[in-house]
Length: 337
Ligand code: SF4
Ligand code: ZN
Image (cartoon, rainbow, N blue to C red; front, top):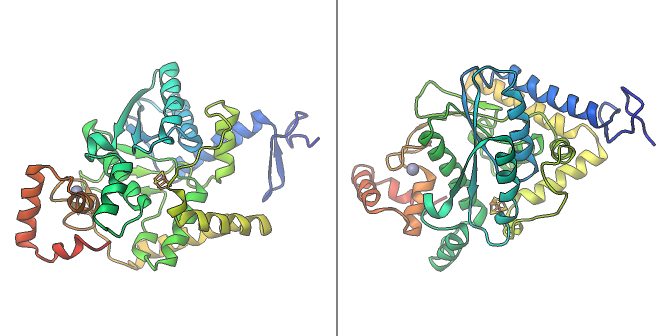
């Protein structure tokens, strides 16, 4: 039996990079210390903030909710609301919803369940069917990611949140970094920092408190705190997602050469640092002319998708027509990713 490096209790985790073993209590202390340090280092949260936490009910987001709830005892006037964006994926999302609902009710956390049906006009399953019928070239995960961000921004504006927190961990960040390198999307690479903030009132600060924490540690933190069941639950659309190939590759690399993920994260942070000095790409945010969410174009990707799928409301359709009259070049984007 391997013992904890700090006491005589059995170890539940060994950090292969530092070779330190942790018992349950010392692992939880180590984990929370690391997440608090990230929050301080990147100046993520201040007293008086109203944080909207994106919670899927899975291990990472339940870990974030639990950790931030503990933090409210240390930072004055910090308020939390959890939002679960229900994409409407039959046989998948309904399994994780009770994790959030039970936790929120037990600990008195405010929560909102925001469905694609209500905010977009159709569930993801329906969107995938419509897209197929219209012969549109997009994968389910493209719709899912774009619409999830859209709903998160909408809800944040509805409740006047000052910060949006998401549970992206080091593995998520490194995978997205590599995916964007593969598609030569350097503009997306430089926006993969731990914080996105701006003086623009429509651009709500976004933070990733688990940015420097590997996925196996967030998963273990969730399990040790009894936040999720150790069961396998996979989205039926996962096979269309390139992320899962990249994930496998990165995990193989880490197994062979422990510390590879930290190395990749370090190179990403270095690129972001260089970009902040010499502007590798000129990326500006504006307000979408249809929905008001932040966008890098006059009309955001979510509204373009909604237009293609026939999901714009009547008043939104005439807003889009007005935009197209003044900016006919946007009609090209309507059929281009
Ligand atoms: Fe959404 Fe794709 Fe993830 Fe399923 S696998 S939840 S469709 S991003
Ligand atoms: Zn929009």
